[in-house]
Image 1: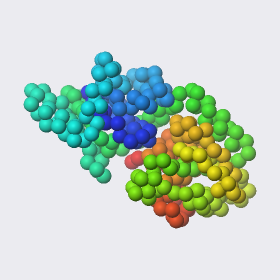
Image 2: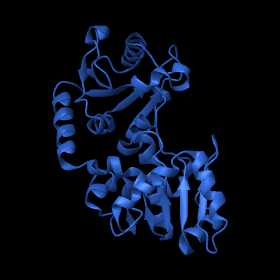
Image 3: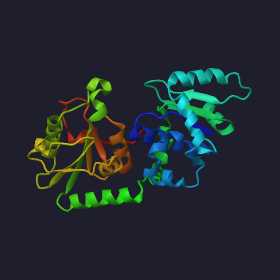
Length: 291
């Protein structure tokens, strides 16, 4: 059995982590518990209902769900390291795994799979990956992580409205908030940066096609900064904005697992702006497959 211990990052990170482990568990048939996803559980079909399509997967690590709070004690890597040291004193100690910064941990390793099937594994980190089976079980992952009905309806209503007046819908992920400090603010772009990229993309689309830009942001936007472009703010709900991006024809935004998930889920071509002055070329948009 495998338990995902660490709450790493926000929604995009946790979706990818859970999805890679789910794909691996689906392929190899071991039990999986993910208490680290609990805060986002009410928003998705499988996690809201506990129905993972017959897979031996659950959210809670313990039979008494309130005991999951004990995992708060080992969220910090140093605390988890102390747990690793203490576990060596146990006669049947669990396998305690951490990832390494900038380096994927391959879940297809025989030693990992043997431990997952035969004993208890505590996984602490977010760079655990099974890229082969992530792709293979993509349809299953999309099914399990479909948003619950109220959010699906809100997304369908919004996109239906946009497509009444436009042939092309471009989702623009404008991330502010924590990006003011993340990576020293490298991806904290102003509205002018996004508007320049949007205009560059529009110029490469057929002139006869009406293009609307769906703006998804975690802060209020001044729409006057996008003069000359047809824009529509999204609903502002973080799940609805994510799946609205997934329903667009193209997605544009700063490097983020949020837009990567939208691209994977909706199989929508994505372009990440790695720097504010980056050229925008239509042929650079690619569906994110995490392979």
